Image 1: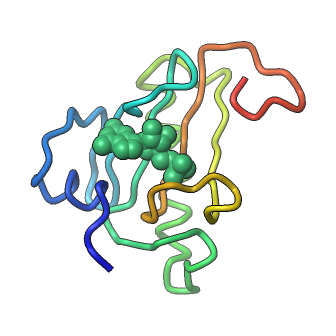
Image 2 (image 1 turned 90 degrees about the vertical axis):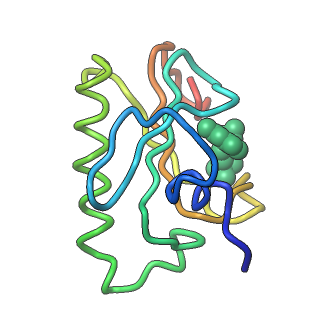
Length: 115
Ligand code: 5GP
């Protein structure tokens, strides 16, 4: 499969402001934010969907959770944020390179996934 837009951002082909970066992942602002804080946390390893992750990816998936907390702290929203992973086109996934949406800054209500 051709490189996703996120792979191109990770390898520097497409410039993007990185809010956070470590050896395993980057965080960037979503180009079309659905909330005052809408950040994408993207592993550098290409995994197309969460369901494609394998046992070898266990540490990476845990790392993403810890990194999400770090990014939320960095952005001052650690007290109230939501993580969303859309898995598959039927669930709204449009970029087939695993990513976590970090959503914050709006009041969360039950039944509304983005606040
Ligand atoms: P998905 O729908 O796959 O869960 O989320 C993909 C997200 O990537 C969408 O929220 C969309 O706005 C965002 N997005 C798509 N292309 C770009 C891009 O080139 N740059 C950034 N920063 N976000 C993008």
